[in-house]
Image (cartoon, rainbow, N blue to C red; front, side, top):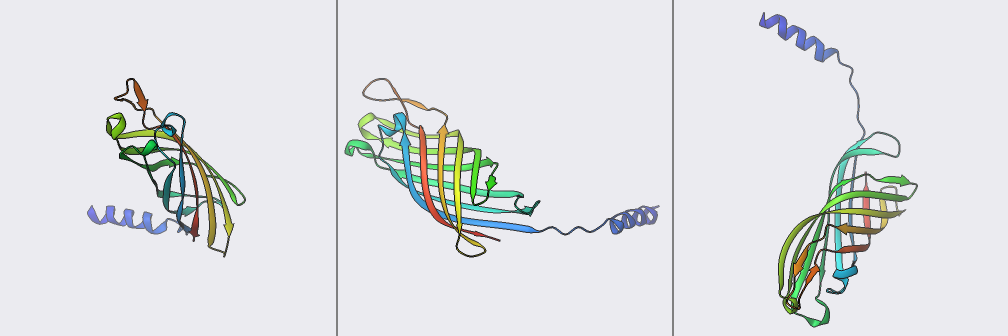
Length: 188
């Protein structure tokens, strides 16, 4: 009985047609500025921002692919008015759906935002992890067949996190940001 089952299983898998899959991958590294918006913009300065993106998957059409990626954007900001402390932010892209129009990509998605802040003047010391909606616009200008200069603008709307401050009331310490980045992208 074992031989019969093994023979059926072997003939089934052996007779399946073989399909080739075109693999694809991309890596980009960018640097630029993170610009706080609205209420958090009253508390912190514009900051330096870096972004790293790694993608691997399979091509499904001539211009499209499906796969998995890791995408992190980190920024660091000084406290306004010379106040002591720090403000650090990391954005981890969770799900994105890039839509390509030639060299232009429109990329809506959702992300997780981690914030580590200490604002001495306001008596705030907080670590927070919140969801965010992101809308990105990327322009890739080809240098060679596989290398692009990549310019990116990303608007981020993070779920509010109101913290009590020593001056009275509450302040939203997560806020919205716009990242403006430029760097290199390698595609295979």
